[in-house]
Image 1 (tube, rainbow, N blue to C red):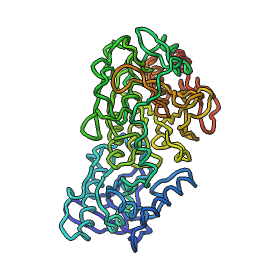
Image 2 (cartoon, rainbow, N blue to C red):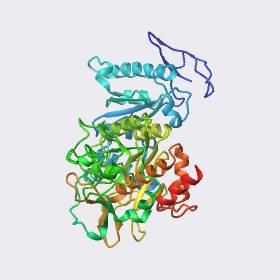
Image 3 (cartoon, rainbow, N blue to C red):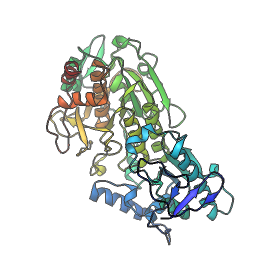
Image 4 (cartoon, rainbow, N blue to C red):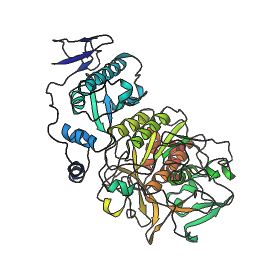
Length: 513
């Protein structure tokens, strides 16, 4: 076995050391270790963008998925050439296996992870300088050094450096973080940011005390009936999305308006851009549907109208196609994961293509005990062949999709085997008549649909159920939701356990926990 060893002061070569067991600390000399079968550096020109697109989209269509570790190094290197050259490197001690279940408990400031972290930085700088005409230091390469997750993000297109990293057992993945196929994502990126122009139909709401609008589809899930038992008090819902509207005080200074006047808190932060507030109204709608106030102003109420809100702007729009967006959402996941008050996370955003960086982020939050509701996918006609998108497709997330009031999948919603629950949010007679939410300004409710709306509604239901018995674990809350859902105990092939029943789930929590 070949071993590359980087210590603080000198470079040593050692031979003949046996591999330790998985729970055994390595010898001090066993830091960076090469794979037994080494891969040569790519030869010839990089593949064209069209060729890389064909590989990715073709694999997504034929296998129902795409992951970067399914392709060869030349494809990875080629993809990097056709992006902003941002590369995410997941690392670990060489003797570790899959670390996804322990990401939340790692301390990168000491022990083997610190040793590997420091050695890998030294290794990257030395390898980069072998091909560089000018002397490079770590800051010339660095994009982000994650303090919670074992990820180093650098900017490079050097195939020799990439090959050297590819050949290390310490490298969990090398991901071209910014690469995206040409047209579908570009068009999808605009989805969800503009309010609906569909005129409000009086059949789609009722007025409840103290002058709030109850969206029509809440009745399909017995939400108002559940409110006789619990309303979300004491639970904080984290929402990661594209931004809030600074012109909507019901998600700001008037968050405690009406029957929501219980001293609840709203916190708005960002890991993307320079503010939590933006012209994209999608995050505004999702936050409102999950926890908007039961107000006295004639505006639509949210589901968990007594829950707290911790909003983080983690993206520019609903499609995570930029390296900065994927990194920002990952950082939002760790931030919410580290907040003890947050119980439920709602993510009505995603990408059709797997991202190891996104996966690390949601795995971290999951390890911290968070219940993560994620949108199964909402798209345009030419992307309907996609199945459940990411991060919803990951096992650490609960995939939610939307259906019509006749039980059919909504016009633009994705479904598939990863779906856990469904939410009614679209009229069969008119796909533009969806659920209702707060507009960017004013109080007249806006229609908004897709699996995005379904996810925010499901997150609100989870918060209501959890508030009935705040000492419940995530597993117990999931048991309440699942055991009382439409198709339980049978899980269907594309719609999971079907519609959530807020009243039954809340009663189940009270009776059993």
